[in-house]
Image (tube, rainbow, N blue to C red; front, side, top):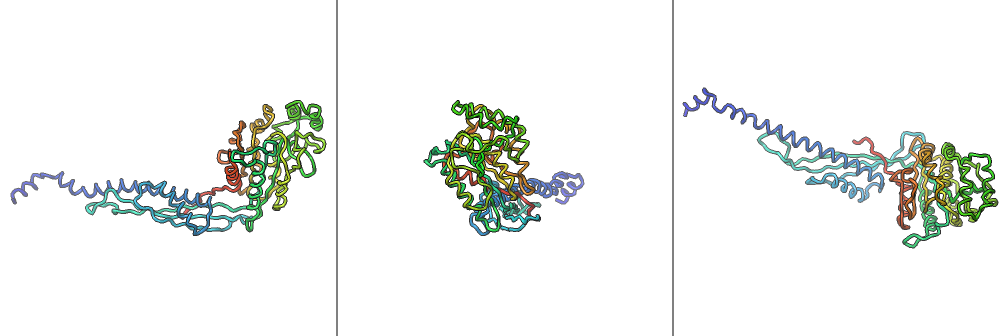
Length: 421
């Protein structure tokens, strides 16, 4: 036996085997750390994404501290992102409020979500360096949104078709009045915040409280001041009154003038036919106000006439520009295409950058102005979705969907992620 060992050492038999045996723990340790380490780094990145999305969702809903819904929502995001975890522990949700470092004392609400998940290691052993059999991975996320004051203007379609019912039986104009009143009461009830609401009813033009019919377009001719008189001669000649008066519209100059309101094509309501400015109805705009009694004037207003959405948008943008709130929202409500078709007025304004100009002019240093479009029961041919953005474009078919769309248009603000712990 001793001779065997002497020959083994002398002849160096098994040198590679001994070397491999000595290196085995090191090699497997490196393999374990490389595989498991990269997996856990990836899992933590996924957990971080889940935390941030959960914080955003909680901020958007803003249920308040201690609500069971907070944990349910956070765990939902954990399970959606961390599908291979063995264990998902109860998340911790903390809610903070405070004021931003600005002169207007903008109040914010902040949600911070933290949690951890359990993982089982694939390569674990006491013979080489490795991770423990079970590893807990933790991370957190945070999001904040400002509870700033808000000015909202509803540019509301008051054309004859708004008297028609929706598929579930509700009348469009009745639903519009009820929802605007409901949202106004909510906005006015916010403690410590001064919110304002305005309403701009429109058909082919708008009427103000001084009894003036206004087509809010910059004119291309001094003859435009006689435009309404000219239409009386062709009052019953189909679309001719509209094409006659629209020939005076300078669409490019109109966009450039936003948010100013042009009175170049205007006349007293008594001198205007029923085709324009709801002249046959008791309808006029409601300036930005904090008084629910002012908004209640809607109840006595009646729809009439044909649709020209852009007249409501231009007048609505002008009214909203008078506000001083940190956030400004223009909600456009319509139930049909511009009529008569083929004049290309709204399309021309869109092509000249009307929506971009409104956002640029109405944005504040605290937020970008929001435009929302609600198309009740129809699919617009004009690119209103491109104008307002996909998330601000709604096509409700029922009263319930209409109410949901109006609420989202006014209140929905997700917030933004901030630096986490």
